Image (tube, rainbow, N blue to C red):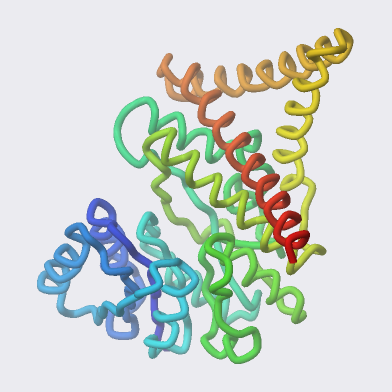
Length: 334
């Protein structure tokens, strides 16, 4: 049986880290062949206390904490990778709660040679109670909110562009290298792009499941998607061939709204186009809101889901455009 290292980037996760560790304890994979490596960016809350308390309760699982002074996710992953002793690496997140067979299924798929990096499906859960968190969780799992990514909406086992987190043999690092620390987000997508560029396979298995705790407020959601959008363009600068249509839609939509809004000041016909586009957009949002209401029975989601999806689209799209503009400005100054 192979030895598995589970690597986890972490910073101020006192409310979720124990949920993850408890889920790892319930894994069907042998505890004696599993270690947990947490790269912590010097958390200022009680995260480390919670980890140490958990270690005392469950000493049969090897767990170690390494410092991540850079406090960015790619650096955390690289630090954890260097400290890992396992033949197989499974990358998880402090907001994730893997199903009991998550590790065993990941190992099985790797041993069967299905891919160089193996990942599964997210089941998005609210980060806390209340209608706002429920709205965000619904939006983050709906195709209108996040496009057609298989790991969010499900599907058949297949080769894909990317998977969340991932499981791979540690010797993959010798072929591909470590995570790119110049990118403060999109690190998994970039790593998978390198795997595919080197002729490797990224494999999606819907039976590998984890619950992912979504953001709890619209402000946190906006900051998350701004970060995603900004660093997505920086990643695409390195791998332009990896762009997909779903990634172009939010910035194109935001740009079109801005252009139409600007010229509608002088041209009535452009104003009518703007009104029509806005009507179509909010009609689509209303359809999704009705789906949320039907599924949950919570009337508040009729308001919350459209706000969440609009926040995701405009934060991601605006940040992508700002990243383009900032790059152009920097190149002109040089």
